[in-house]
Image 1 (spheres, rainbow, N blue to C red):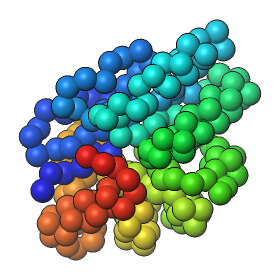
Image 2: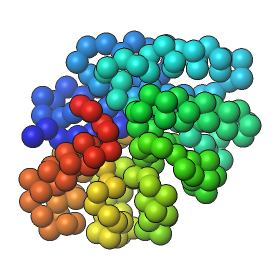
Image 3: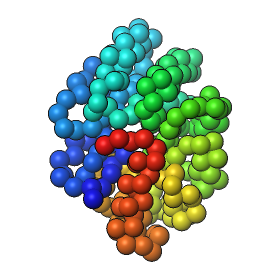
Image 4: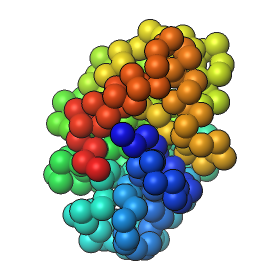
Length: 214
């Protein structure tokens, strides 16, 4: 059974890891790697938005593209809020239309995103989750999932989230960090006081449940 890295910005060559690599606009989805495609809110420019959305529309159906994102809203970045909203809405509409999961970047905008996705028909995952148990539960109550990395799991807050959150709504990732996905699996196994095989089986079940079709 391969270990699943739900979201990474680094090419992973380990034979026992299935990773979803984020593609930047105009990159090619080729080879045996699986990808997510999306427009990150940090890098949006009004002058490029149409071209980038056209690119997204052209690659979103590729069989190696498993998800749309990361995309979302970020109140700490300098990109205008209206532009972020327009890009995010365009992407979640695409994701819903092609029935592929949505990988969300969220900084201090959880309520806005959950409001936008009220009634959303499809999978959405808040990646890089590093907040409180109550916030995780709010996302899950709205039908979403969270994805966490190994570092977060070493923190008291991460330990509480991993212990108490619904396991069926939890994923593991490396994002842009250097640690391997194995470290996240080991951390979660220790928190749950379960074997690695139990964690592997849960992540495999979650991927199938939420439509990540490796």
